[in-house]
Length: 121
Image 1 (tube, rainbow, N blue to C red):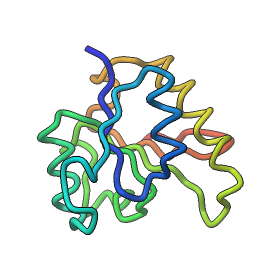
Image 2 (cartoon, rainbow, N blue to C red; image 1 turned 90 degrees about the vertical axis):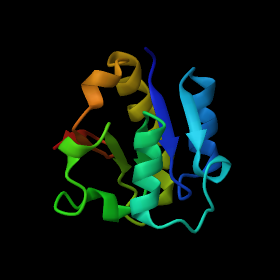
Image 3 (cartoon, one colour; image 1 turned 180 degrees about the horizontal axis):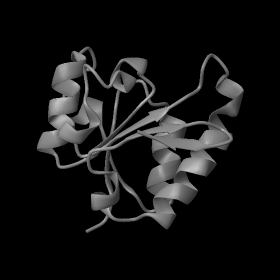
Image 4 (tube, rainbow, N blue to C red; image 1 turned 180 degrees about the vertical axis):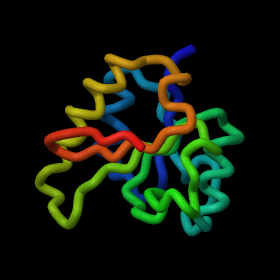
């Protein structure tokens, strides 16, 4: 089974298009929910769609509020007020997703994607 990603409303179109062009199944929040949906609804929709949430929203990196082991996977892009690194992050993410193409690899984990590394919690 291929990877299914659910892109939060904060994910730029350039990211979703790049992932889609690389062959990944990317579902976009606005196609499923109102864009102002609260975080709990967003993560629930990702679960319902059997998808990994991809987000820029730092709230999802709080493992007390969103324990990774309760979800299909959370990928948090770490831009940190430096939008110029977004393309580096997307390249790193695409390479990682290609290297680990099974949904099971992401189950119960939080991935913090930075320009120079990916941390897994």
